[in-house]
Image (tube, rainbow, N blue to C red):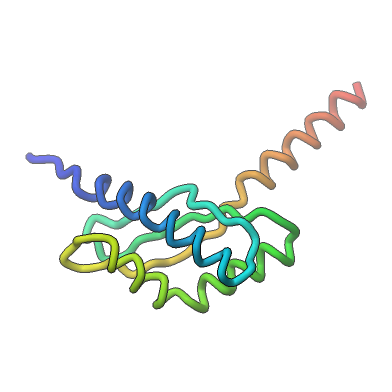
Length: 116
């Protein structure tokens, strides 16, 4: 059975191109700094989840994430202009909260170590 590397290549290409688009978009809209942390695409190449990390307060993160979802079609169009692919996948944004989770774990660990 032949293993296809195409989904992985498409993920890498989308991550690279979308990072550039996202940087320009957030600057124009005066939004918090946002980075692409991962892209996950299904085997059919029809849906892509783009995991983004947003710097700033909870309110700034929500504002930026809401703007991304509001302008999803425009961002997908801009992505399609930069990538040669037969069908551009639908994009879905996922807020990457791993930084907050790591900070919470570290603070809990520190509290426990201070208690002993």
